[in-house]
Image (cartoon, rainbow, N blue to C red; front, side, top):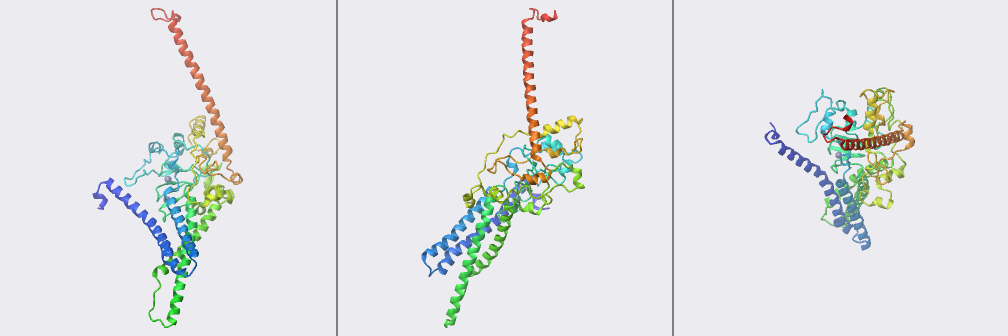
Length: 460
Ligand SMILES: [Zn+2]
Ligand SMILES: [Zn+2]
């Protein structure tokens, strides 16, 4: 029997949480200790000795150079951890209440929940009726261009939330992350939509910082050995040892500097291509007019067959991550967050689904009469205006057409249909009000025409 069997579950859960928090802080502490060690060794041990004969201005510049890089790296690191990648759970409309999800699960497979897990575990998505769920708790009305492997809408059974384009669930963070790049163990957080800029800046600054420290430590060791050899040649008998700090810094900083520089260049390449580490490794499937059943026999359009539809050219791709003002690119502050746009029409999808189902005598399958999947026309995505240029994940229209998505026109059609239906409902409401007024008027007319005995005149 383990320790957890002896303690109350709440204490066990709290202890587990504390342990996880402590463990996640270890790499953070390690990275910061290494950076501080490099900064301290360069500024207070190496620079004063290497440049002892140099001009004081050169000494000051050498120290300020590394100190500035250290400061910028530290701020970028802190901001990357503080901001986090961003999650659809933070945006209203994406989460679905547990009770609703449970109601939409088929009865044959009752949802099982583990007491050790803070999140309710649901049965596999095949037991979850996504059509029903979408009509009960539809995702926000914004375009979506990606699909699950079977062509259906993306839903996270762990977060109980609709997954917008490019969002993925991180098992380490325990939640979905917007435009997830990767989970970084050195930060103990995910790199995603919100902290991508500061993360790239950190990589850039820290690679220059590491290479600068490695260079100064290597020069320090070289000069020290040269002086020592000269001294021994001239008959000195007492051998001095090179400070271990210097050798260690030369080795560690050059290895780290090389590794970080390679990763920085790779990340920069992906950013210029508007791709993420996950998208670069995995194939992204796009929504299409193919029915899910066809996914088994024909290859649906994907990032491999059509290309990356989010690629808008390197300038616009970089501007999406770094911001539109190139002067602000170098400052380790996140992009300003535009207010969330709640003005778009709310969920025409359930209307579409319910009308289609009514028309087909309560046929609740995923296909319409023509064999097209109803899911294809469901717009889902993220609210607009968050990236400063009006849309969240703008797409390359040419590639979109190549993928036969035409999601925009479909969204427009739905929006028009929704507006039309709203007008109809308003008309009906007005008509009902008229009828109520008429009934009220008629009622009062009756009272006026009542006889003293309470019997309406009309009945006499
Ligand atoms: Zn999730
Ligand atoms: Zn993560």
